Image (cartoon, rainbow, N blue to C red; front, side, top):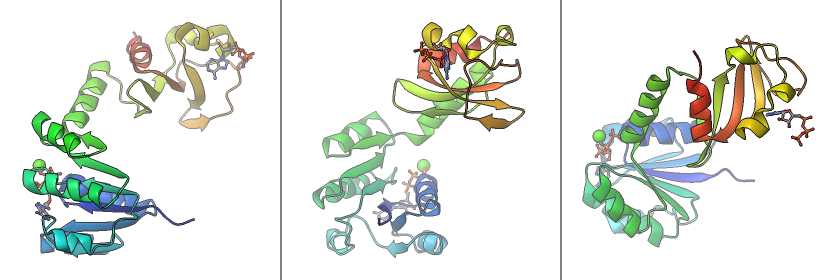
Amino acid sequence: MTNKEFVVFGLGRFGKSVATTLADSGCEVLVVDDNEDKIQEMADIVTYAVKANVTDVDTMETLGISNFDGAIVAIGENLEASVMVTILAKELGIPYVLAKAQNDLHAKILKKVGADMVVFPEKETGIRIANKLLLGNFFDAVELSSTFSMMEIEALTEWNGHSLRELNLRAKYKVNVIGIKKNGVLDINTDADSPVSKNDILVMIGKNETLNKLASMHS
Ligand code: ATP
Ligand code: ATP
Ligand code: CA
């Protein structure tokens, strides 16, 4: 099996962080930026680092990215460059193009020209952090879709000493417990009859509203 191949256009904070994470996970990563320093900075981290202007169509066509699995357009401020490289990436046949938008209009344009996914990293991170602050809940959540997440929920006081069977969480809240952390150690062999203790952290999959509700029920 070959590793997945990604190209990241633009090495701002977002682009660098995406490229570094993909490379650390064993993907082949090509980064493109017209700033020499940014290219130097990433040269040892990714597979290829190319200094080029992404609006230069001829150069982009020589990169050989048609067979790549995905492109990340991480250029926020230069609208023209962001739109052009999104179009180009789709025209070259890259199946999944994710683009970063600065605002709603920018997002609309990116979608119109073919971006498969548009993200607002600052806005999205802001919302996530604010929600965590509001809930007083600093546990981790993983978004599985726009409706479902996996979240760590501290056992409610009234759950103390009761088993999953007694708590009947699946029927009552439509959540599935996929693991329980006791004293920081995660056990994924959850047994329906073992008692839950009040300091346990339950790793659950369920609807976002339900999980947020459970997370906010702590007195
Ligand atoms: P951050 O993620 O840091 O907020 P940003 O979205 O503000 O980044 P910009 O600062 O607009 O992004 O640009 C990100 C990178 O894209 C910069 O490193 C810049 O050099 C590069 N860049 C901008 N225009 C071009 C272009 N036409 N060709 C190649 N690289 C470009
Ligand atoms: P059911 O078909 O109702 O899920 P079951 O016999 O297959 O029942 P058991 O594993 O015996 O399931 O658990 C009985 C009950 O305990 C479940 O109906 C559910 O309410 C609760 N329960 C058990 N395991 C979990 C879990 N991992 N997450 C949430 N609830 C659970
Ligand atoms: Ca910025």
